[in-house]
Image (cartoon, rainbow, N blue to C red; front, side):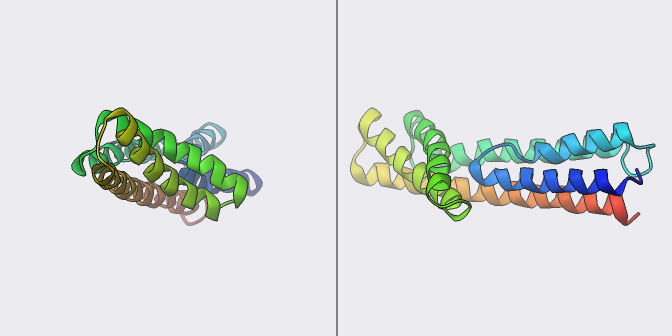
Length: 170
């Protein structure tokens, strides 16, 4: 592409997008959009449609793993549908509240605390589970969320490394 200013901007936006994964948002699609811009703005030197497709597949895999591990983790530890819904709502609500209290660290802690608390509450209130069963489901939801978050971060950083490689190291 040979436009260092645009490349740095796309990399910075992509980095910010990857960090949004902490909040449970699909931030890995920001590097995908950056790759699309690089394909359109470039002459096929740095990014091609093949590279764009690879970026899209990596980002999509993060979202698939995110959804599956959250549900499977909660389900493996005895969660009902209500608990799984609570995990999703709690993770998002915890991220928002955690960010308001203490950006970055609060965001990360909020996701896991919210995920646990809402899973337990939804299990107890809507599925009529005991406190022990609800707590076990909450632990499963947190474990699933931890695996999903780790995978999404790894996928996001793979995208960033590939972007750096394609822009400046080829």
